[in-house]
Image (cartoon, rainbow, N blue to C red; front, side, top):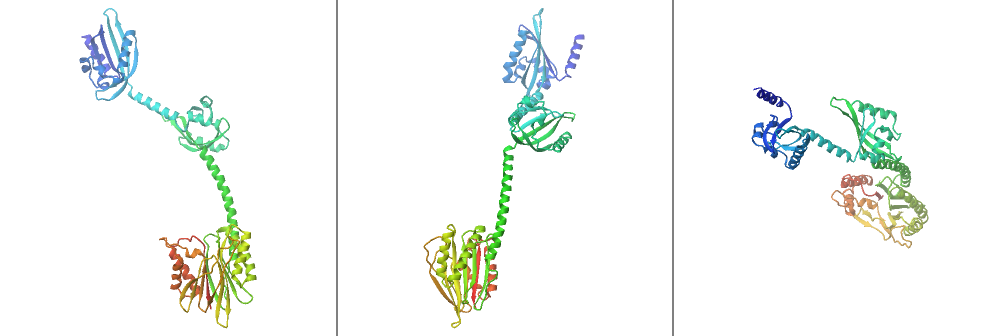
Amino acid sequence: MEDAVSGVFFNEILSHINEYVYSVTLENNRILSVYHSPRSQVLLGYSPEELSMDFTLWKSLIYPEDRETVIGFLTYARQRSSTSAIEHRIVHRSGAVRWVTNSCNIVVDAKTKTERLDGVVSDITERKKRVLQLTRLNRVVEQSPSAVVVTGVTGEIEYVNPKCCQITGYNVDELVGQNPRILKSGDKSVEFYRELWNTISSGGEWKGEFKNRAKDGRIFYEMASISPLRDEGGEIVNYIGVKEDITERKLAEIELTKREKELRKRNDKYVFELEQAQRLHRALMPKESPENEFISSVFLYRPMDEVGGDYFSFSEHMDGSTGLIVADVSGHGVSAALYLTLIKHISEKIVNRLWNMPDRVLEDINNELVSTMELNFVTLLYGCFTYYPESSCVSFHYANGGHTNSIVYFKNENQYELFNAKGTILGMFKEYQVESETLTLHSGDRLFFFTDGLIELWDSSKKMLGYDGLTEILKRNSDNSITALKKKIETEINLFCGGKPADDDILLVIIEIK
């Protein structure tokens, strides 16, 4: 009766502990009796009664890949009559796999020749998961492309990963126990480090850049994130820094900044030179449209850049005639302005000498340009307006050096025509010949001189204005004065382009015979 009571009491105690307890008594390898504590129901999914009825059930619960190892372990323990432990996996009745630690003690009775295996099985699944997670985490940290540094609360280094050693040039033993200030290059102020420390010691995360010095003296740059690690009670126990080597990017940024400063300096110089060129270009162009007793004129000029390559000028001669040059210089910007200065100087000198011989004017200009500027060229039209009172007409004697065709409007016939003369561009060929032509004009007739930038305007559908488009604009506005006509033309070409900037300079000179 007392043994029964003791057995019940013992069983009651075992039902309240987390471990599963078993005991097997054998004689000559034959099982005489078994005991399984109530905890088997939780750990294995089988009751003590089910396990006691089938002595082989326990083997089937061992994870297949671990079964041979566990049986070997038990055999070895029985042979040595020792206490041993093993970790292995079991398969719960539900199919779930669990990790356990199996501690086994062998007791041999020399008198009865029996042996007893007393064992305790503990569920270590969660611990195994944590160990596995830590192992994985350790691998991630060890193989991380970023440097990882862990310090104590006072700042001494407790851990560094291989990447940290690679970047700094120090090995683990040289860094552990040191303060991170060993890497300081000296470019940061005391206030910088004070702010960093105040942030992390108060529980915050600090992010920023470091300029550090490696063991060999080499400077390197890091983008760092430093944050506190807390224990279960919420106390800060460590600080962890994760740092990315940004040396290449930083050096590239420094070089880019240097280049930007140089470019800004050059740009400032260019802007200054461009402003001077603008002043020069404005000085070259007529301030107002000339007018005398037999002609009136207006002009429209719109450079593509701050300084354009188009040019025109008027000249008055001793006999009362008026000369006109319309030119288009290759290029834009400062170089074009300088070339225009040369054109103005050469052309004025030659026109003053040969004003009534347009073909000779162009030939002499070409010779001057060929010997002076071999890499540039210009298209140029020169003509001279002369009034003949006896016939009440005006002659326009001209020569064209590769310039865009011009348009003449004969008022009496209400007719628009293109007029031109044979000639090539100036400044490219030493052997140069050109023919001059003469137009006879009467009151109300108009001449339209322009550069190719006007007729080569494009609309949104990729249609070019061309001579036909310009002529249509002129026809629609024939009844306007030349001043009003200029404004109408400007409005219509703006509508044609849809407000899009032109791809070239635009120059238009309108002459009307009085």
